[in-house]
Image 1 (cartoon, helix red, strand yellow):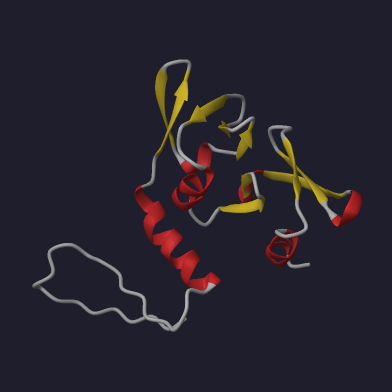
Image 2 (cartoon, one colour):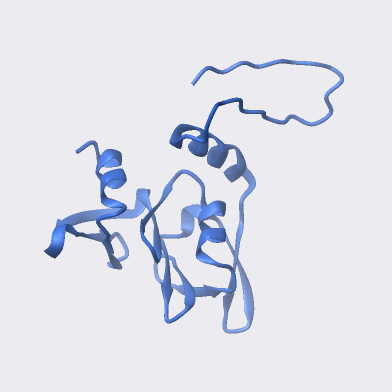
Length: 144
């Protein structure tokens, strides 16, 4: 990606403009990085509103039509939709199934499973299947 920086005393607040002929994975990652700098995630914990930073989150998953946010030892819920959460998370996260996003920095190991799927285990002992649809991008991330 070509990068150009223009400085002007007339500009009060910095902003970024990305030019391209389509939205590529590289552009999405750049946008995610630029937007993730001030991101906080709000979640519910038995009536209390909890403020989380993306780096605290291990996984976000849909369970029984409810969005569950997994941290190291705690679980929280949110009323946001999964795609809304995915847009907030930034570049350290990847969607691995129709119903889950994981923090790539919290992966412990990956094991092959049935039907071409893989099982991903996180450092907090949570696990989730990587579906075949999302497996090529995950393997690309791992360099396989």
